[in-house]
Image (cartoon, rainbow over all chains, first blue to last red; front, side, top):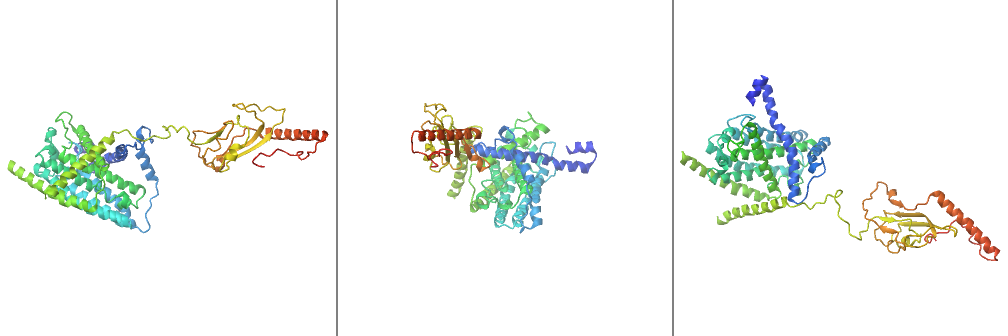
Length: 341
Length: 191
């Protein structure tokens, strides 16, 4: 896609700028859709109906109305807050979430930046989110916000280890950090996807990744940084209007990013599950997005199933269960790969 | 060590059980009733907004007296014998004009004690329960149908009739004089 555009426009900086906006074209409608979808899923899991009136059909325009309301809201900055950090924080969080999209291959033809250490880059850059969250919590000058931010930092830092370790298993199998390479290694059929390879080691690695990614994006049951019932909303308690919306947007962007990483690493990325049957650049985008939406549904499903963990339980799961297991799997996969060669 | 693994197995199993439950609920029909579009049928004896059918009201004031919060105001004017006010739907002869029949529904406590004594069953509870207003004044319902000129006419007629009656009684050597000049007979409540 990049080469085609360069050929077409003959202006490299313009092409790169355009390429940078492509994921945004997806994230914005996705966030609008996902908020509505989440509310519908939540409602139906509780035998309710959720938004039904706005826009006619099942309240489809509800989030559009919400965002219009948020845009009109007064931009409140608490007088005791650190004004600069307070304003900067939502942008840092969104940059952290958005930067990951640079290396995510949406199809065989489109990847923002085809870097060879794509996976490494994503793991590194998604840590930036923590800085933004801490910034928001600290700058708000509010005890509950700071609590939320501290919890969030502790949680994200702890769970990045099992995430990195579980992703490493696949890197060991493929021998590359390049996400396109990893995707291509899974082409063929459903059975070539890494979840079903080296059974059951990579399957467990996929589960570990998924559980840890829930913690990474502060989703239930690991939503203690936001903990609506105890911390009000955690680090974004003091935010209003579009700044709050930006936090929300980055949360959903993050959700999609971690789901997409799971899909790319373990579930064949843009590969069709039917081999060559419905594959191609456009079908590739269709597959990767629909698989990721499946994972997002799974996140929502878990959200309405499980209660929130305690902080000590969270640390227990992270350090005493996920990390030892991922080490064991790395060992197992390493031996397996070594034996095979 | 054994407990550690059992713990993990247990938690995975229980999470799956929980997910099964929520999955089932995802397809359970919602219990929500979309209120303004869909309404539940009210119970047969539900007590909501009062309604008075003025065609049947004989101005007996029993509802007003039964009211524990005094939210019903009734004023009546006697009719003269030459006027036929008609019958109510239960066959009672109407003898009084009812120029004022106000119910302050904001005061009403929905006890329905006014409904039972009504001899003609003209005051009753309806199934209307959405009648919020922006002005409290709008919650005073005026059920009376008489226009101001009709009221004046009726009053004037009664005055002349009573004066005539008084004169007749004097002519027959009667002693009563006190009714002369009474503009309108007071309603039972006001007396």
